[in-house]
Amino acid sequence: MAGKGQSGGPPASSPPGPPPGFGEGVPPDNALHALGFEFTRITGDEVLGRLTVTEICCQPFKMLNGGVSALIAESTASIGGFMASGYKRVAGVQLSINHLKPARLGDRIEAKASPIQVGRNIQVWEVQIWLMDPSTSERKDLASSARVTILTNMSTPERVKNYEQGIKKYSKL
Image (cartoon, rainbow, N blue to C red; front, side, top):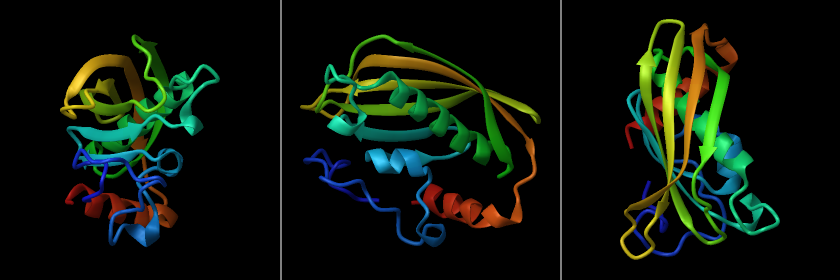
């Protein structure tokens, strides 16, 4: 998915569209998509994505709302857990997040979700949210750190099989 935000140029003014061919136009996560979050890597071993902090995701003091950080953590871990479980339905059962440094309006952040433990029934993921250096697009400072516990032993209903196909296509981009 080649967008302006990934190449270091200015971010697009509206949220990115889903990748070509993604299951009936469904983005990997609707809520994150609405905020402008861009997934850059999706596998069962790692989920990466970036977001420019805009007015929509800020608290009144022009800093990233902690609830948005929690949403990023649970969503990225759940997508990774979905893939790591062999595309079984997942549900978050515990989320713990620490906010270490503020991300301010206009900052660019990157989230990295990695599994700590992948079991048949339970997975535990660590999610780090980093402030990006605007001059290099490299990770600079850790803004938030989260641990997400996911239940993974549920079957996927037929009505969401297109989501599984979309994630499979998206993870290969």
